[in-house]
Image (tube, rainbow, N blue to C red; front, side, top):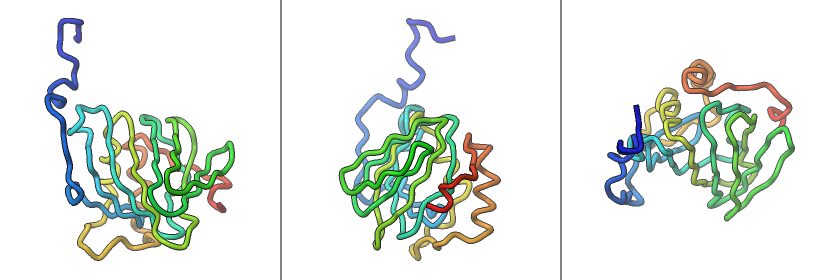
Length: 173
């Protein structure tokens, strides 16, 4: 039981400022995207997870709902189109998109070259889904589009990580 006299549960993870270098982080190939996990739930006492994501032209996840976390996307390079049931919005460098938990959404690189984003999920822990479906980051880059086996692995792992893939008109985005 946590009382006002106890340390908050995340206090142990937050005893110092954490600095991660540009080449540091766990590299993962997920559904045809390159991810570099910079801060995991373990690094932040469960507060958040943060990663860099490189999305190939035409890339983007199937429409889905996060049941446990909110997401914030900061587009660094390229053009990303975000979709929710409220509509679509194109976003370029410097744009920020907020995806609250419980809202069906997706995004797609609608540009002609790789797009890059910083993505933050709160609370942390969603990186475990990425680890469950990742292909080895062996330097060759992810395969895009992802194979049927990779998609099947993601569909199977989703419910275990608070993620539901949904069918919608976004599939034709």
